[in-house]
Image (tube, rainbow over all chains, first blue to last red; front, top):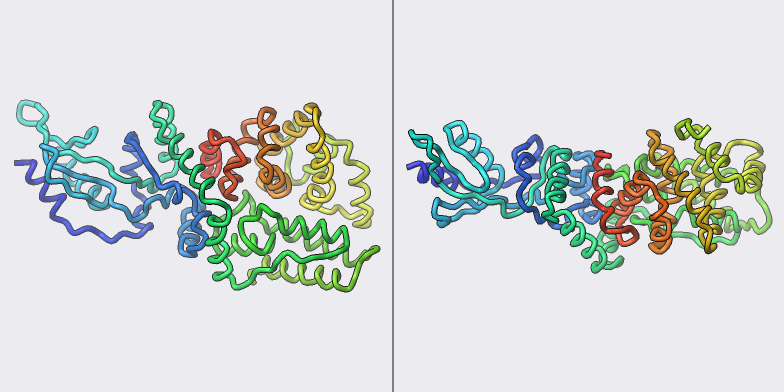
Length: 284
Length: 146
């Protein structure tokens, strides 16, 4: 009986231990994204996993694609017999590999049902399957397109996801959100200059430019350069390097043209800022 | 003149054309650099931003808001990543720091500006500053689908 063949194939395997990289090149889920999705909002952006340097590397490998690392380890399919019983949870790699084999043997996978056709061309149900968790691997374009289809179909999954995501951010609070990221980044970089106090108005404007209240990582612009360099995550389309170099020029210009209120303390701060920025750009 | 696409090379020139009010301040900055061009980031940070902040603090100046949003859209629709980057680091950081300002500007913003701003909000963890409905466009923009 085909049901037994399918069932044993799906349930007889030991679950794989997967890494995020295992998902690259995978296309099946992208082609079947018509199902409801419920991604973990916290995983939608590695920005919120900055306390985990490994996630930075993973992100760099994914070309800063926020969608490729959603649920990198989860079980994603529940497979049951034709009566909807004797269910087992399968990781997506196992499911997909076995599905490919079954499809070659004439098994169909449609709308959550596995079936084959008998000699008369009638569909014979062998079991059911459903996605129980989100995995959006591989091709981001297809993923996004599928997300768009769901949204346009009126499913509202995307809106729900984003609402949840926004709610998570709103309820997490800046401290909880930034705290782990900051500690992780400081731990990883072991270098983070704090916003200095200065008296010179021009220097104060530069310092304000370097250290903004909305900065996501510590250390101001230099910190952003280091973060982008170490993580591969760009915080803007072209990153902060050019900005850092421009401000070095501004600081050097200021040092060459001292004006009123230019104390030795301010000069020392300006030199320290230059050193910090240049080190950051230089990968130090 | 406006048909020429904005690039990092003509960004400040286009800024000065769009906002002639900054000319005195720009010339002052040039003098402090002994006539040397200060660079896009410095002009936006130390010439345009103070002017922008003053304008945003004013009420009933929709004409300026329209002009400002048109300029942002021209930058955002350009293919020059470095020019767009200047806008992100020098303007978007300022805007996203104040959700009320974003809300005020939103009706005047073009689609590309909104997508860029939402993208920035996502990357910087400031999604509360933009309408939730814009975040999917921000995601698309982030992954390069727009």
